[in-house]
Length: 392
Image 1 (cartoon, rainbow, N blue to C red):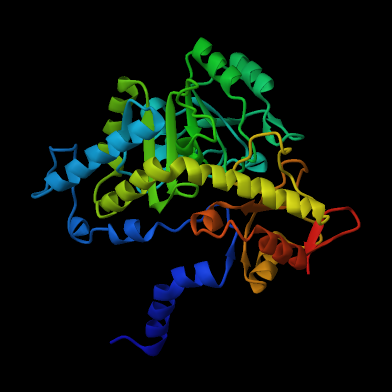
Image 2: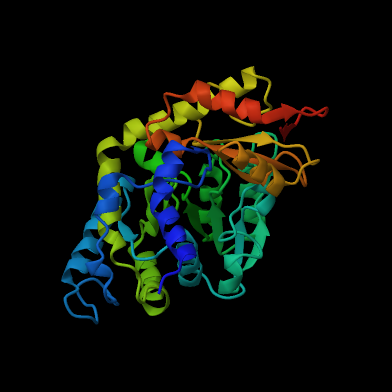
């Protein structure tokens, strides 16, 4: 028997999407909602029982449709990214990174990766997911002034340390990194390069962010629910068929049993929409980021963002005063109806910043209201004596 508290929870859960769109200002850089068409494409029937094994050679009956969807996703992602192979069966990019670590390295191997202080995600960095694969992790050099990879020092570090794997891409990317020197150094020492594109995959597909695969990265991993506005899912894409074989062996042997095949059709709709409208959407996201950052600067808000002539992404940072804890800042803004996250401030050791994302409001067609968005943010923030921001 369902009690009243459970009924209220179910009602709130059912109304959540409407609340986010109509009653909240969602500036969380890791948020998205699939289109109505993608939501409706979710297949409960395909989730009824597992579909284990390679496409068209699965253990369960009546799984040919699942296999056909897997193949359609592979073709669509290859088309969007210029990849030669795609693994579409994992539920998140954390699992995708874990699969790649186990497929392309052995316990004790060295991984160079971004640190937590510079925007590295737990699935990339020291003390996180790489430890499950038994990897030794060292931090990649970082340019704290420009908030990006220090490409030349990173390349020198690769040559000196001769790692097995190099993880590029981060959760905090306000501008594209120059990864060419690192790729060149990696190839010279026989290291594999991985680019975690979770935050910028929609911008890559839309042509506003450099495509790591065309620049020579070996493997790209990604989630599907940030700048690509889909359901949570994981993707792995690459160029070398030998890498595909090793990745598939790990996925099929250890990580993909009982995955939710019902999401495949929804993801296919999202990818089709990206093929049709992705370029315009990606441009709108970057324009929204530039415009919002500029408006906040004009209002006296300290902002970490590229200059107007540079390439923007879907996010910028607002350095915050250490006088208020990050969790308290988030909670205070939530009271204003503003949903935003925090991250380490890459420019200040031990500091933190609000990480503002524009992909959600752009996907919902709210990017024509940026002046109102700026006013709401300014009203909820105030400048401290040291020039940083705190909450009202």
